[in-house]
Length: 163
Image (tube, rainbow, N blue to C red; front, side, top):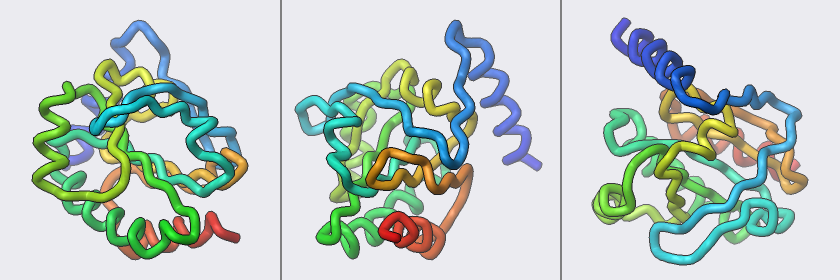
């Protein structure tokens, strides 16, 4: 019940912003974006994907499901990065110092990106955290997980991207 209330509150907060959140569905082309990596450097999504399957993960440090799932995603990423799998963990709405401290604690190996004003999250239609999109090598959304998931779910979705 608490989780459902939390999701409803996030939906209401998202609706309060000046920008309307998009509704991104399976089969849609993932929106392009430009942002910065936590460790430095810019990322242009359309160029960065470079024909590789991509997991786009929206998260925040206050999200109780995000920490264990980010570790689970890291395990999947480590197994499949040599095959071309890429992961972008996009922090929604937090400052760089907060994100850096959290990532240092976790020790994940995939790229972590900043979205301090949640502009990218809004373009993707994120209404609750965590939210994960699985994007194929052509930039098409092939899977979407809203809320809690485990390593097996991430593995299954990631492997589907290689088909």
